[in-house]
Image (tube, rainbow, N blue to C red; front, side, top):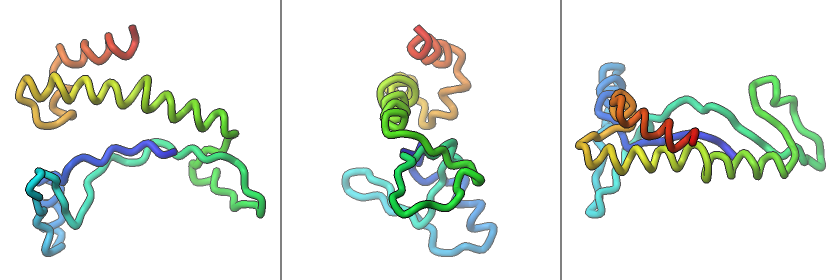
Length: 124
């Protein structure tokens, strides 16, 4: 289970790549408004949780930040992400942010009222 948000291709990231000399980056937008691009702009991975069940042994990947644990803990982390903390708060922001004219979660998080909304949903 990995936690990583991958939003639609960002024009600012595209410009940075073009400035660095990367060519042919133009995203394609399908008839159903799906964005496809030859680059991914995403936040850095926050954590990777893996069940520690390797019948043939494994490398010491915990030295680079990977968390190994039992199956029950992996299931709890996934449930926390999908059902409790992250996905419900992003959905809440997305719905109300769209209604208020925002186009990015990062911009929504600069709105005091929306921050108060997700804090209330998340903590209460």
